[in-house]
Amino acid sequence: MANISRWDPFRIEPFDDAFDNLFKGFMVRPFSMDMEKQAPQIKVDVKEDDKAYSVHAEIPGVSKEDIHVTIDGNRLSLSAEVKKEREEKKGETVLRSERYYGKVSRAFVLDKEIDESGAHAKYTDGVLELTLPKKTPAESKRLTID
Image (cartoon, rainbow, N blue to C red; front, side, top):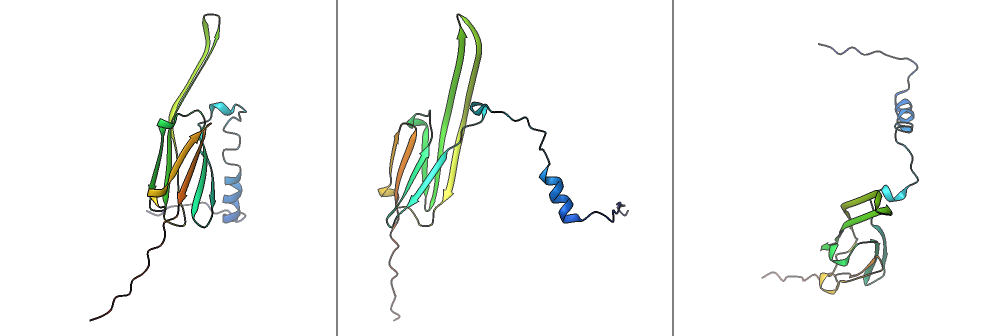
């Protein structure tokens, strides 16, 4: 069977789809100013010099035992187990109790490979500081033909 479709001579395909997608979901989701209800994210600053990369990742409210850093060649992965509990009491009556348990992660690829043996990590006041030295490229060796 053939599909029958209606043709609109005033419809301009690429522009109409872009216009429809611009306002899609605009009034569907409620806007909230309460930032604590959103899932936490890892905010990262990466700096580079000739010898190493310097990474500063903000992971507030997490113990250092719950943070995992994985290096695989030039790929860096950060993950953390986040546990937030908040309880408001008035006298002995609990008015509100909120909890959030989850995992946040961030992964990205750097230009040069990382030397895992010289990598250093430090976590203080909710900021993870990584020093990742660049791996020196192996010198190419020319083989002589017998």
